[in-house]
Every structure is written in C-alpha cells, then in structure tokens.
Image 1 (cartoon, rainbow, N blue to C red):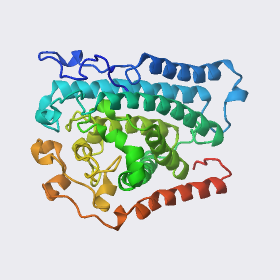
Image 2 (tube, rainbow, N blue to C red):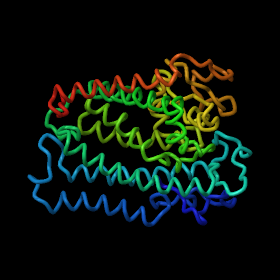
Image 3 (cartoon, rainbow, N blue to C red):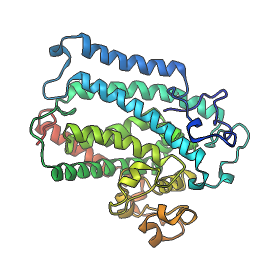
Length: 373
C-alpha cells in the first residue's frame, strides 16, 4: 500500500544514484503514493479514534472485547509499522545489492515499466483498488468488532503459562497459513479468479516490499477473512499474542516481496527454526514465474508448501548458503513439478470451504461470540 507516486517518484522508474547512504533511501509514506488516499486513510482512523474518545464508553465499547480506543490504537500501529518496515526493506534492497534475489538484468527497465515490471496503466488500476482495499478493510475491522464480541480480545488478569501461549500462537499461525495457502492456490488454478482478481498482484514480476498489498481489493479482503479472521475464531489468541500476531504478519508479508533474502528479513529469520521454514526467495520465485509458476503459496512457516508439494528452491543456488534453508539444499535446482488432482479447480477450493464451514459451526455453537480459554 505504500508506494511511490506515479509521476516522478524517486526509485520508481530508475535505481537511485550511486553513493547514497542507507539513511537516504526511503519509500513514499503516502498511501499508494497518493495524497487523496492518504487523507482518506487518516480520516478513517481519526474517525474511529474520535468515536472512541468522544462518545460514551457504554455506547461504543463491546462487552468482552478490548475497548474501541485500543482497536483504534492497533489500526494506527499497523499503518505505521507497514510504512516504516517497508521503508527499512527498500533501504536494504537498494543499499545491499549483494543480498538481492534477482540479478540486475531481471530488473532492466523496458518501455514505460516501473522497477517491478508494471505498466503505467496497471499502476493507475492499482491505485483504484488501493482505495477499495482501504474502505473494505476499515469496514471489515469495525464490522468484526461489533458483530463478533470477543474477536478483539480483552485484557485479562489471568494469563496462561508462556509455553501454552506460544503453542497456541503457533497453532493459530499454521491454521491461518492453511486457509491462506488454499485460497492462494485456488486463485492460480481457477481461471476466472486468476484473470479477474489475482493476476493484478502478479503484474509485479520483480517484487519489492511496496508491492505487498497492491492487489485487487477482493484479493486483500479474502486474505484478511480467510487468514487472521478465521484463525482467531477457531483458535483465538489472547490480547498480547493477538497484537504480536498482527505485527509479525505485516513483517512477514512485506519481507516476502522485499527482493532480498538474508538476515535483514527479521520475521523470516525469527522463524527459521521451524520445520520447513521458508525465506523470501521462495515467494520471489513465485512472482518471477507468472501464472505458470505455481510454487510457494504459503504464508508464515512454509509447511503447507512442503506437505502439498509446491515448494521450490527458486534462485537459492545463487544466494549465499547461510541465507538458504536445509530444504533448499536437499531439493536442489529441480525442474517444475507435475500437476496433481489438487490443481483441479473443482478440488482446490474445497479446503477453504471446509475451514469456512468449521468457522460457521463454531460461531453458531457460541452464538456469534469468540470465546477464549
């Protein structure tokens, strides 16, 4: 969502001049590189904050959920973290070329394309969808607060032991990742979903972190629902873990599109101890191959790509060995995978529908409340 202005934004159609220091590299802090969308975002967040502060608590706060003030604080924090971490990752990309995943020849500029391989008309389309993403995400976040008491966990005096919280957080993330894996895979194998929705995101063949949320607005909405929302309903996190999960997910999402794969990727480095952990070069290969590159659909952890046979090492053999995974070394530079029954459009969406059915059953059982404990 944080991109450069289309007209003449620095780094948009050319690499920055040599000799700049790390601190001189920064991406636009405007939403979608547009003042109008930035003001719309600020107005939306300010409206929620004003309601939380000015209206009586009994009118705006939901029993069993965190106060609306804290919801507003979470949304402000996520917006700030997205911008600042995007700035950090793009500074790493431009300042440390030795850690880039794709070689410079792959970023060679052609015609009126930006650094990520997108045409001007495509960038203009993405600005419109950024606007719809902003509106739909605000509606979703506020809607979840009032429709599902307990979804935003309230602070509790009783906190489970740390090892139990860690295990629940891990389970929540694998559940989140499972739904998003099959949603993402379906967006590739179901022709109408690819052509009308997900192909927009793949206009970026050479991703940078600014590309992370540049999708069709329905793509972003589906990710939010199938990911954090469904996981929180099925395996709810406590207040502290809820905050941590949302911030970690921003880090991980931006890193996957950062164009660098190294120790500067904080979230991926944090989870490298997990079985089948992935690094950003796996998802970068997914973008580099366009629709035919049906590899690495997973978010957080990477286990589902390995279980369902869609992990590819990509350019791992071109990177420093300390920045690759043991699974890369075992797999090597193998050719593409054979398609299976799971790639059939009629099959790929079934796991998503199954998780959705489990969510519906649990909400019905708990009378549209997210119960903790």
